[in-house]
Image 1 (tube, rainbow, N blue to C red):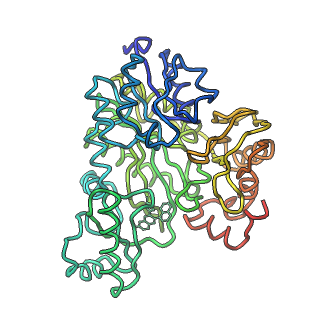
Image 2: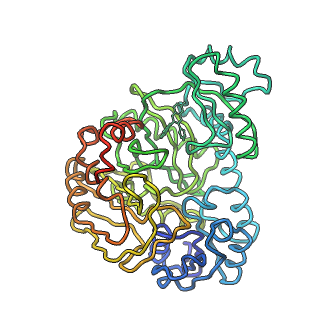
Image 3: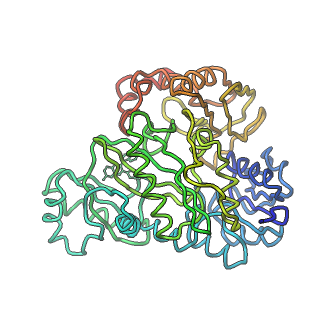
Length: 457
Ligand code: MV4
C-alpha cells in the first residue's frame, strides 16, 4: 500500500486544473504545494495549499515553463511528486526526465513514452504495430527528395494532408487537393516544421473531409493493467479550441467503440505506457482513424469522470506512485451521458481574451451538475494566460437529460464584470445540429459563418 500521507505533491500549473489537482491530492491525504507566477500571486486557490511558492514573472516562459525554477521550488518545499496538469510542461519529455533525475515522481508516463508519442510518425508506427486503426498513408517520414511525393499521393488518393512529425493540435499541417500543389506544400510544411518543432520530418495522410473528433481515455498502472474508460466526442470546436465535449460520442456503434478501446488498452501494454492518456481519432463513415496520442490529463476529463464514476486525477496520481489499479475492464461501467461547456472570458464577437475583474458570480448546481473553476467574485483574470476560467459539466441518465440539465445550468450561471462565452453556449445548446448529435469538426465554424450568432450574443 502506497502511503500518500508521506508524499508531497507539487502542482506545476495554474487555474482550474491546479485546483482540480489540489483536490485530488487532498483526497489521497497528501501535502500539496502550488507554484505560481507573479501575476497569480493573489489567486484564491493558493490559500488551500499547504505551501505556495512564486517561480517567476507573469510570462509563462519565465514561470510555468521555467524548468530550473520549478525544480528549485520542488527542492525547497520538499515535494516528492510533480503534477504538470495540461498545457505548459505537461508533454515536455525533458521536464519529465529532469523531474525523475531529481529523484522525484513525475505524474505522467515515462519520458521515453512521451518522446514516442511526441513524434507523430513514431506514434503512428507504434499504433499500427498494436493494431490500432490509423489514417491511410505511409507510417514513415517523407524522403528529403520530393521526386517520389506524387506517386505516394496517387497511392493514398487526393485530397492528402502533409503534417509535421513534431506538430499536433492543429499546428504544422497543409491540405493538398491536386498534384500541382504537392511539392510546394510539402516544402513549406517542412520549412515551418524545422523552424517551430526542431525536426523537419513530415508525413502524408489521406485528408478526411468531414470527420468527427472522437477520443478514447486510457489509464494504465506499473503492474501491466491498462484500461480504457470510454470515449468522448470533441467535435464542437473553433480553430482547434474545443468548446463543448461529451461522453459517450452520440450515435456510434458501441461494439465498434469497445473494439477500438480494447486496442488502445493493448497498445498501452505494448509500449509500457503508465498513467492517464488519450488516443485521438477521426471518425468518418463508420470507421475510426488514429491521429495522435495525448500523454497528459485533458481539460475534458470530467465528462469521463461523471460517466465512469472514477476519480481519474486521483487514479493518475496513485499509479504514478506505483500503486496498482485494483480495477478490471469489466468493472468499468459507463453510465448515462455527460456534456461539458468550457467557460472562456472572451469577447463574443472576436473571441479574443477579455481579462478583467469578475465583479459578481453565481454558479449553478443541483442534481448532475459539476463546476470546475478557480474563480470567485472579485477575482482578477490575468491577461498573461489563456481565457478558459472554468467548466460546467452536466450528467444525466440520457443525452437528452444531460442536455436539459446543462441548458438550465448555463441559464443560471452569472458572471459579471468580464465578457464571457456563456451566451454562445446558451445558443449552441439549443442549436438543432448539436441537439441532434454527431456533428462534424466543421459544424461550429459553419454555424458561426451562417448565423453570425456569436456577434448577437
Ligand atoms: C486531420 C484532418 C483530416 N484528415 N488528418 C487537426 C489537429 C490535429 N490533431 C489533427 N488535425 C486534423 N487532422 C487527416 N488525415 C483534420 C484535422 C482537423 C481537426 C481534427 C480534430 C479536431 C479539429 C480539427 C479541425 C481541423 C482539422
